Image 1 (cartoon, rainbow, N blue to C red):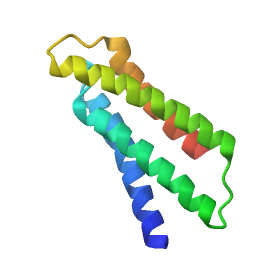
Image 2 (image 1 turned 180 degrees about the vertical axis):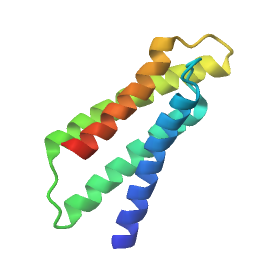
Image 3 (image 1 turned 60 degrees about the vertical axis):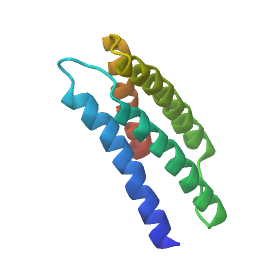
Image 4 (image 1 turned 30 degrees about the horizontal axis):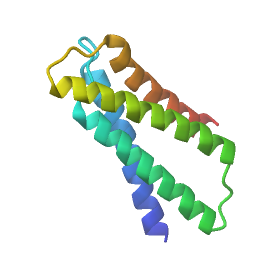
Length: 115
């Protein structure tokens, strides 16, 4: 069970790194890349699985923190989905949308580590 938990944490952190890394890589000309949407889905799935594992074990789960993180992740996923669809159709992706994906991912990391 420890290996599964560690592996899910690894994938969860990898998803956050992908979202923020791609955002920082394109910071001068922000856009939303398809990888950011896939990373947001990875974070969503692994986050839900991590909460489930903690609930099954003896881990104490802060439901309010989980709810806040889930809400932020859902917003990131929706914004990334909208942005990647525009990107694939060669339509312009607004700076606000692209920066929203990156900034909210950073906020989610801050909630995870500082709460």
